[in-house]
Length: 430
Image 1 (cartoon, rainbow, N blue to C red):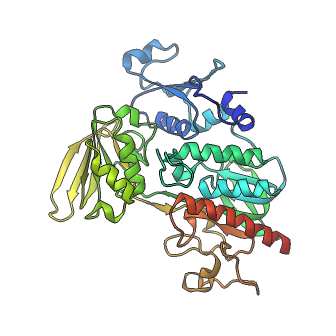
Image 2 (cartoon, rainbow, N blue to C red; image 1 turned 60 degrees about the vertical axis):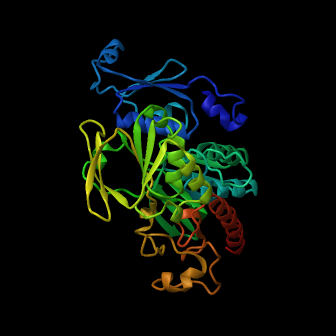
Image 3 (cartoon, rainbow, N blue to C red; image 1 turned 180 degrees about the horizontal axis):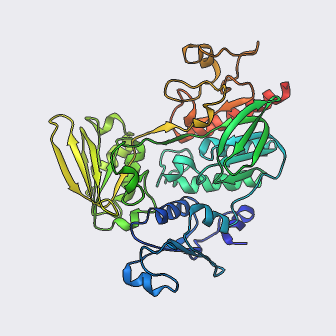
């Protein structure tokens, strides 16, 4: 059993241990980035070894940078994983598991602040609880380098650290957590929910909470998919910041996520340029972040502009930025661009169900079901829906995925706890 798995029982280590995993790969490998990002967000220490043509040939069994065995991972027990993937690394760490029970009281989909909060409160109150997360624990908040306006942390806390603390708390109370698992089809039958996971596993629960959050909004540009993870990143890029030493890097967006990313990157990069679509940073950014950014000598803010092109061979080499007033476009050389332009709700799973979503794809709950947002599907019971209940009784939504929610960590945590209170009410009535 690795130290990473032992944390489930023992809590966080008192000091940062030596690297658990060594990752070898080409500097522009998007697959290597995905592994680094996953381990960074999971608080697993690692060592990144960026290879060049000469050093790659010195590793036994490798023919060069284009060898299909890359990226290669080495683990503390001496084992190696070639052609490594996030799923393979998680399997090696002992994190890929099957559900232990046939039926649960509540299943929670999404491991961000809302889902983790729901898992803590449900498990602590004796409900048979399982949480399913398709990526790293923490959701979008888990990629934040520093959350400074969350109650109780006057010096701030990283999103990954906050998420890991919540995960350990949920596990200590008895919640099961399935990482790198995703629901692909859901049906509501027999006063419960039955979900088919992507790996073929079927999960059944008497009630469920959807806390699947939002996915980063894409720029929608040519070459975007090809360069993703190879110089073009979504979110704060916590694992990439140390690789930006002395460079000019670009952060796209004007919200809190973009501001946090800029501040984090400014500790490493030579200069950070924020590219903001609006006219004023203060229109979309919290005041405390505006003051920090204005005071930073290494951050420059360019407003009223948009990125209209990205290009490069194996990795990002340049971006094209257009002034929204004059229409003039400029080509700028860079190897790192971080995009934080908001997101879209992760609700594709609901497309074949009766779950009501608004025009933007957010899940409609509570009294909103009785108004315009839910007018096409009537509420089926004589009692009114609970505040966070969807139009399917016993199915709840919490956090950013919910229609008209407040996009803050604190409100997501509160909604997760509140959803569990309504689950109790529902189960007592069914």
